[in-house]
Amino acid sequence: MKVKTIVSDYYSCNSYVVSEGASAVIVDVGFDSAPIFDYAKAEGLVIEAVLLTHGHPDHVFKAKDFSDRGIKVYITEEDYQMPKNNFFGLKLTNEDFMLFEPVVLESDRLELGGLTVDIIKTPGHTKGGVCFIIGDYLFSGDTLFRKGVGRTDLYGGCEKTLRNTIKNILAIQHDYVIMPGHGESTAISYEKQHNYFVR
Ligand SMILES: [Zn+2]
Image 1: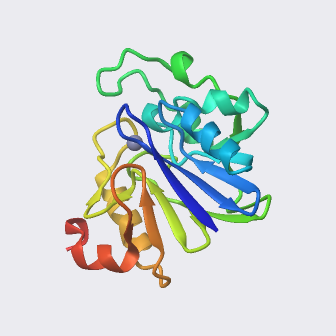
Image 2 (image 1 turned 90 degrees about the vertical axis):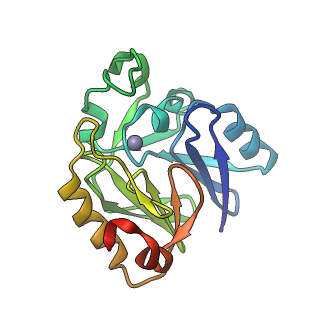
Image 3 (image 1 turned 180 degrees about the horizontal axis):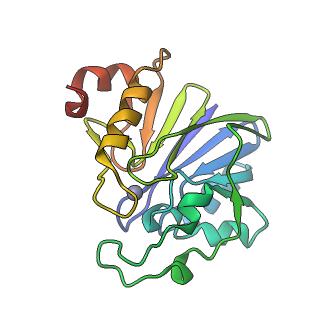
């Protein structure tokens, strides 16, 4: 399995291209989709699906480019529906950027091409936020960062809920590599030691 990180210029959102053989899934789509399509083409990959960790604009903005090509874009119902008109002062509404055709994420496992994706509910940063586990990687969106956690002051955020979510993630026995929505990758074992939020 291979994981390629593509960082969006605007808001520095990490998009990940996870591939096994010729099958690929994309985790989060920021403000650039072209580098993702270019990479997939260069590597001869078939994009099976887009998986959205949560509904914030910097993680979903170009998802429409994928659903327009008939690629399934998974997001939880709660995060698809949440209002987006007060995001860092952006004068955006749901009509401006939730333009993609969503596939509601309900199950806790998806089989996509040669990839098995386990989904864990991780509310706190948003109500419908999720993490994806693929192979030895845990894609944490804005829930858990290297030595940090997501903010809870935006719509649907809740510190108490996030605290519980982080506790549950760090209790996972397997030492997954954590691939966050922004910044560098980390690992469960490293965050157990160094994340201020769990001290
Ligand atoms: Zn976010």
